[in-house]
Image 1 (cartoon, rainbow, N blue to C red):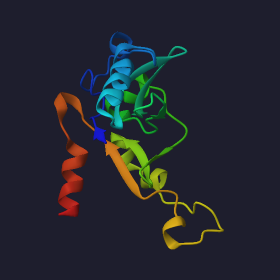
Image 2 (cartoon, rainbow, N blue to C red):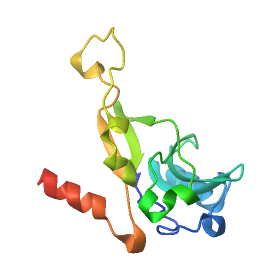
Image 3 (cartoon, rainbow, N blue to C red):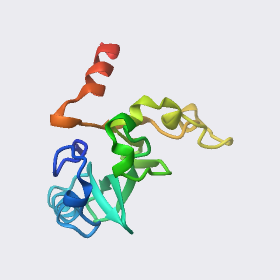
Image 4 (tube, rainbow, N blue to C red):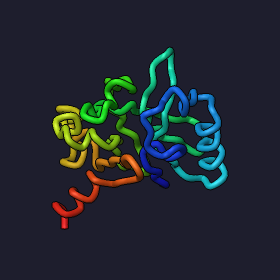
Length: 158
């Protein structure tokens, strides 16, 4: 698995009209090609235009060309991100070699309720099956490539 940062193909930008692509665009096609060639799962976010809306969309690309998407739910209002990008409304729990991975983007980190573990089902047979996911991954960046959220989290963990 290779994890690329938020808006990996452009760097963080508040200019989605100029930098957006569609899901058939060059960056998603590049992800599909590299994933297939290297036989890897490739994930990262980019600016996607869909039906007149712009999304900070994480793409989870499998080597066989199938993919899942997660549109960033929480936009940074103080920076005007909520004026430029539409909010996503559903989580993406992907799977890799038996691991269930909850994929999130940057500012979603500030809203732990959105990433809260939930019971997967009431009829689990092992404790490891009780929860919805095993791993939580955030891709992030910021203006001028600043990884502010990550830096603060690393301090908390270390």
